[in-house]
Image 1 (cartoon, rainbow over the protein chains, first blue to last red):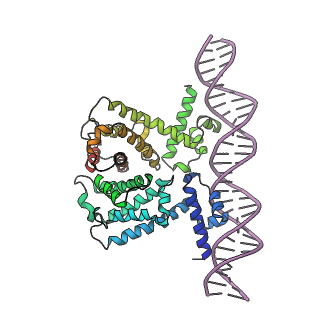
Image 2 (image 1 turned 180 degrees about the vertical axis):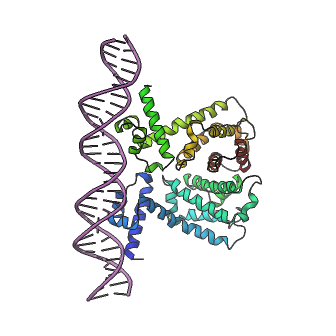
Image 3 (image 1 turned 90 degrees about the horizontal axis):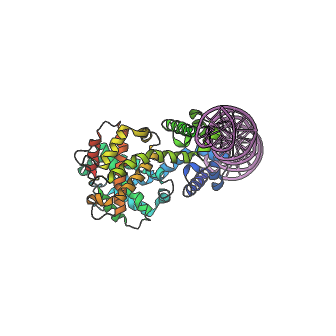
Length: 183
Length: 183
DNA sequence: TTTGTTACCGAACATATTGTTCGACATTAT
DNA sequence: ATAATGTCGAACAATATGTTCGGTAACAAA
């Protein structure tokens, strides 16, 4: 990829993230983004069809890394979803968050956190679905499969949300314990 | 309230709801609303400062009714949060939904359901908070109070979401059972 | 029924945002 | 060195926002 493209793309992302942390997505204009990123209007539309696509690409860039890690570790361990195990996927993800890779935290804590948490949850559910055999033992017998998966994914994301909203005072292990307790 | 005001207000709400069921909130313009509602532009802005306020007022109108009922029944029963009891608040709310009071269902099932479910959840958490003594017995000992309340509210709202997304094939009692099972 | 008030309308308006086009210029890869 | 590609600024039409105005009709109260 051309070095110029790379710089422009990053400048736009950086500006976008910065704006997202101060105001709601709907209220951000393309004009503000290009001013802060210091790129021309035509250049913006050369990279992204619309503001919505910019958001989409940002989500992809951010989460693919985190979930690639999670998926990779899937194949090396057996009891990923046993939350008390020190190598559970949940614990892994929480540690990723604490390290604040990719400024993900900034976005999950911003006024638009719903946008990103929704994306987060979606990937989470997919991950659980692909691995349901390994954590199925926790499911109550008489509830449907998809209801249960949705419930686990939701609970995890909400746990993360609660953690961040409270300034992450607890350790990942502690959070993992709460998560396990309510499930 | 003047009969004219009432009519205009209702026409705007009706048009707004109708549009919400077909497209996303951000993409709806004031122009579309007033065309469908058949009111003048000036009239719209006479009733609502902005589109955002319209949404806010709509939420208030819709949910105050439902939650007033719930709050009212709070004082007449003792074991509201015992989900198996036939008169639990949860069951009450589910039955309200099934009856589709105020077209609430249409909105909770629309592409913007997040907007309304967020509002729903907020009221839910508040209701739980005001009554935590009566359902505290279910909480695991070692998790914080606010974490638990958020978890219960989230789980209920997600349950409703899942129910609606699946065309509400189950009975309120059945849904209540799922809810109880995962908690 | 009369009278004063209030809500509505249509039209026009300034302002802001979107997404596109153009030629000129700078950077890149080969 | 050369050709391809990315960026720029400026200008553009099209659309959306929120306000203002005088005229008209519906309203409530006497």
